[in-house]
Length: 471
Image (tube, helix red, strand yellow):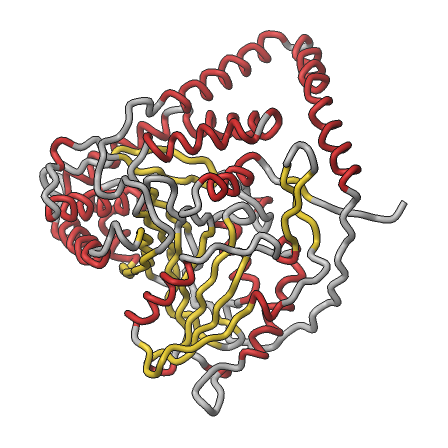
């Protein structure tokens, strides 16, 4: 029998596909806008050497086979799987465009919003790199997007790390020849999936027999796991308050960004307590409070919560594609008196979350849904997006050293988080080279005043910097 290959998607991965299928306005790609000095990639005409860029990307794909795979469906059961794309075309995925010179940041943000408003073509590998020249000062940008079913925040930036280096060396390794692995016949994939599902009761029975060898320990693990799942599923049964962020979204996006000095953020947490992420959430709470108050909302009456994805990717799983995250929900104190009190209340809330078993419960529930029914996880996750939180705030740590793309220096990078049902606003952060880079994504119609939030975030950090340390 000839060699064939395919990879099965997990329940969490499948849920990101289902979100799109259930709502045409939802686009489940993550992404980023990165700004570069051109360096040796500059051409005499003031552009960039896109042919060289494509060669560099092609060489990096050797270690990222998912980026040459596309989706297929196991017949009858509709289980999505990854198969190698036998007609992979790098030029389709690595695109080249320009702003009218000299392009401004405002124009780049508008272009990013338009690109992020377009769904990825499911008949092809689910990613695109748009290289944009024509920026003021001769710089160029990369607007990257990849479907959330193939990457999370960590693995998505791992791909960018593979095409970049921590030194200005602009050499390119000769790319290996791409030989796609044939997919098995549909009948074979169906047999595999049915066999996997039929084997589940036998696996459970085997686990039960093994448990008889250590009944007390097994019972304790069972009770602890069951309790953790129950705690995760029941933690936020009361619906959040309705806000201008929580209404049906359309297909079009706005994208804006801001950069904080990371040392300034760290000095706040060292002086006032908590973590960098606590300072982030306190800034979000204060900025949202200012924003909603300016819109005439009474923040004192709001139960406002943020969904905070947490990576459970272990050290040995760096570079492994797919999603390894769980989602926790944290209350944000919009009505607190002053920035210092807001931070103190955020620290208290996140400590309580860490003491709880919610993260473990979500992880166990994902594993259970993956084995039993991916649709179960999709239904629960969709319900949570509609009632359990008001916005997503995700923070991905990055390198604290300068990175280079074929000798072109990376100056800044601003990440994108997708918008879910009834969530018209989301925040993603990435720390890089002494900076904390905020990417703000919003529905075009719901948030025409998105830029106001960047100013409010700056105001909140200044307020925290000015807050005296507790006596």
